[in-house]
Length: 218
Image (cartoon, rainbow, N blue to C red; front, side, top):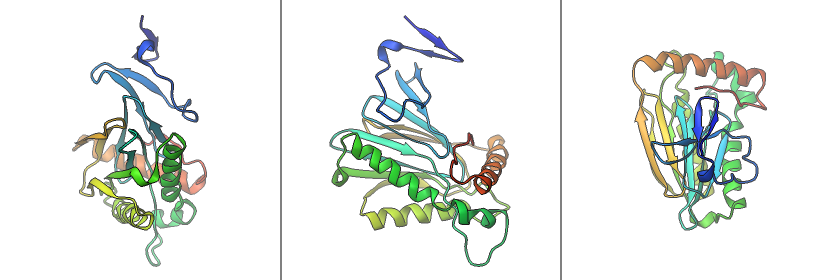
């Protein structure tokens, strides 16, 4: 029997329970991939050891897909890490001082959730995505995000298994934690302006309320 939720069809016999702490995440049955799918929004992360797909869309934000390769437990985060440079005083740098901790928080929360679910730190590998230059009228935020996450991985001694970062295009990202497989699709033309506008709105939200940071950017 199929139960219908708003706008999606869910197969309850295939919907395995989520890990504790992720009950609030929106999950739906994706018939094209024959698995449950979770959409991760900015400021969120999700961990699973099941045959699920975790998806997001990235502009200048970055997602890390982290996985215990032995125990098949992994997850994805989605963050925007502002880092001011020098004495810049624009819309971006006025907000970064209060919001800069998001990147480190997002990485630590994701890693801790994987370890809590049974993963082992020594078996973790990381793939990173995003950081596109979609805010062309402003400082290259995406480049700063990429630099941050690579520094973080180096400091924490976590191996970088793959990356698709930089360039000027937004990306649609699909991650399968159980297998570690990732699909990336570049988004062109018509979505660029929309993504840039959404990221600017997200920036303003960070400046006004940097603690929550959980707004639907895409």
